[in-house]
Length: 410
Image (cartoon, rainbow, N blue to C red):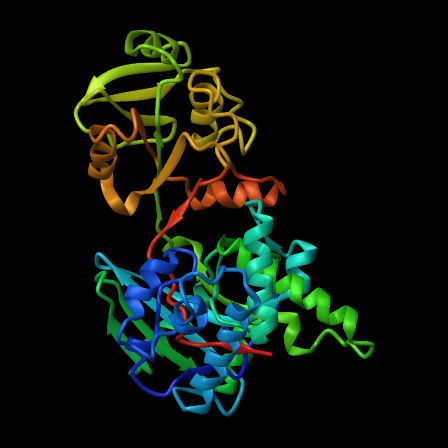
């Protein structure tokens, strides 16, 4: 069963639109400094506290984490964030391009993450995990929510829609055009019903936020080991999540750029691509189905179609388009052995469009680009259920969850 717990969240007393900020890992320190300039309310002061220190201070310096704790405590002391008087669930809705997704904000179990009830599909990088672990441990809080999903439940949808008919606690549109609405679910009957719905679910799935999940679980294990009276119900045993029904999620393509043709001429390269793919010269190529790829080379677009028998259709990882491209073209033809570490490959989220791929290739910075058909949520769940790992940069979820609308403090 999946455990979701209501909690006494710390929320903006006012000006939620000035407090809420993008996730810490989608902007760099320079962008964060610029975004928070002139806005002392921005939650970036908590999520990326290096912006309040001299630029020469290392990102992993102890002063960075201490500053984050100081800033969070200051937000609370100044009354910018106020704690709810009783444990609540919350509903967080995002609207992009006319479509809305509604997520339950709850505390979820670190032990269930360790036990595989909360299922993962990506590896984490040790340096990034260590960074967030120190952030969570120093602040005694999870400030950025993990993005989870579950097979949709009609009863849950009905309860969410009933609450959404009421006036939200916050409602605003960010400069990127995304609408954000937030409701407090404080009725005891609703809370009991939602808790029971999730108890009937065998698993939850991480959509986005593997490092945040791993870090919260690491802090829970550390504090458990240090507490001789550990019961499993202490606040450190849970972390902040927003949980969306799978049928509302939107996964975008995650495209590839490669700096060179691995010493091959254009004709020789295309000949090698032909070995595993059907190749057709087309206009701007956005793939229309699984196992199709767009390729931009020398000012022209091609459509590639994986040939029958060129991959194992029964293997949930090998049958992913990102795997097919990697195993049949990027590695054997272009020499990209490990896309996690190879400096010759880069990745561009589909939110930036195919024009971004053309621009980067036309500039001479890269020599070839590949547009992908988006990985489906069903493929993600299939991989997670098999306890397997997706290749890097398999999914790009939009819209991104804002931080600062509610904080889970230990």
